[in-house]
Image 1 (cartoon, rainbow, N blue to C red):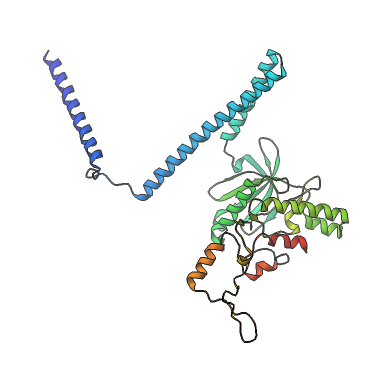
Image 2 (image 1 turned 90 degrees about the horizontal axis):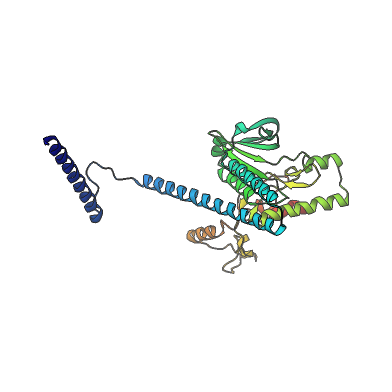
Length: 346
């Protein structure tokens, strides 16, 4: 009996301790007071990481729910089509099982993370300042692709990170038969990889060297396909800035596709006006003694505001291949999508 009483008293003391801790925590929460002594206040970096983790988890589950909803919608559409087709019950069940099998394979492929080990490198077909392009074969399927391998340290050293991001974004956004397709991209500690469509027909420069002069029909055909390729990226507000025969590749059927978007740049051309192309507009209307218009007198603040207004609508960098570079690129007064048409009109 005495042992039972001791055990009961211990339980009561534990309950009292727990209730006192709960009251203390509730009081601190209500008062919004400082944390207890010895407890560290989370830094801004920690708070940002917590917020980023929260956002990642929310996006992950939103994506999962969206995927389930889309899968259900596809199932409903298939069942409706089967009902309209009036197929037998056995065939109906077989088609549903085949559908479920394909859905399972698709989800497994989505979960699989691609890596350099999934591809067998073959012949090198190009080498640049901080990367190389090789023909590679996917080990699982045997399909042949072009692998662009970029060294991260060189990208950072040369300040080419934004250019590489723009190239990857363009290839991911633009779905056109006139440009080289991007199948996937991944990275490791040292390299960034872009797995792209392999075009075995060579480039337009090789074709011109081989044939010397194209016939009128051939010239019309390739100029038309070049126009479609340039227009497809301009619709998404990108400029290529390095249009040349070397970057116009041919597939096995002789059709041409635009490639090498390492110098592309996104622009917002929706509010672009003619006056934005010149930094030497005569704002005052004054003339010099020889009759030439005087240069505008802008304060430093006005120049800064002008640059901030135009920096997303115009490009100012002098980039491209010297033999094909447009004159407006060399003027350094700002240029837009018209620079891509210069090579085609030469």
